[in-house]
View (cartoon, rainbow, N blue to C red):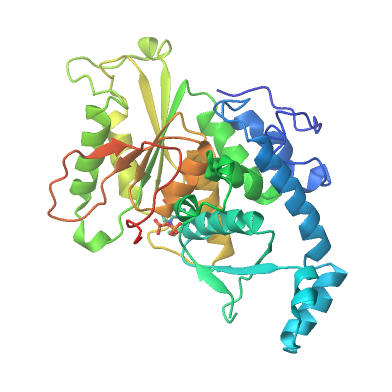
Amino acid sequence: RAKNINASELEYDKEQLFDGLLTSGLDQASCISKVQSHLYCKASPSPHKPSPYLISKLRSYEKLHKWCGTNSRDYNINVKKIVHSKIINRAAAASMCKYLVLKPCNGLGNQMITTAATFLYAILTDRVLLIRFDKESMAYSSDQYFVPSLFMNPSFNLEITKMFLYHLGRYLFLPSNEAWKLIRRFYETYLAKADEMIGFQIRVFIPDSVPQQATMDLVLSCTLKNKLHPKIDTQNSVSSSTRKSKTVKVVLVASLYPENGENLKAMYLNKPTVSGELIEVYQLRHEEHQNFGDNKNSMKAWTEMYLLSLSDVLVTTSLSTFGYAAQGLGGLKPWLLYKLTNNETHFPACEQDLSLQPCYHVPPKH
Ligand code: GDP
């Protein structure tokens, strides 16, 4: 999996810039992931190319953002007028910068998918996107991925509709140097050696009502039935000599609860598999509870999402935006575990998503 990564090679080429999605504008050392992230992608160069239309819209947006963004002269003039409720006539308004102020809310996954959706709306309507993170602000507030609604509006050019979370996610969400260090360290220590990596995102929304065994049953029934990882060979024992020749499959578990990773680890520890593959299970961390608005925790959650997005095979939990973000960034069609609730017979335990795009949470009202 691992490519030859040389941290000192900070030179841009087309592949590094995701086929023109990013520009080489920034000081390279201020965002190392921008230069290096392509080295960790499952398929690089990516088979999914951004359309020329999307690239030209992004370049126009960047100019507009520079012209109207918070550091610009126009921003100060416009905001003063708005704050002092000055009456602006139509002609003057037409020449003013237009803004869309977003206050993303709820967990990190929700915030990311709604930021990507709102950004798409901003570039389609020539607005500058401003994001507020303070608790008090009058701003547009959302936690949803509403992009499918944009399909229904014929005034938007549908050329942009190809795999947008994948492209916009890569454009908008580059790990900071601090997060990148965590991602690289974990990847290089545990994941790089694998022939294949399976990511599990196991989200239990109401833990008190779901027995641990029900979670494991659902996960195993999904993965074994769909041959995502192999069965244990109960007839033979593993010997260290045969181990060396085995294909290594790494299982990365992201969950708030340690039991999920521990159970899978115990299942495969020192046991041979019928396929002869060696399975190694890792869980990065477990918070036990959901944290909102805490930067340190968000960075750890981000690290997990990013690592999940590097999987060859991804299993996520339906309705969880944490999984949506990993799916979108990785350009993957995940196996969606049915939402974990008590006393429900799940049949089937999971299904593979039809698209690289996450779905609406609930069917839209027309
Ligand atoms: P959703 O609630 O599943 O749609 O996902 P969100 O990301 O919007 O909110 C869940 C929040 O709980 C995240 O932002 C994390 O802070 C935390 N969280 C949930 N699952 C995990 C996980 O597997 N790992 C980590 N580190 N945090 C998680």
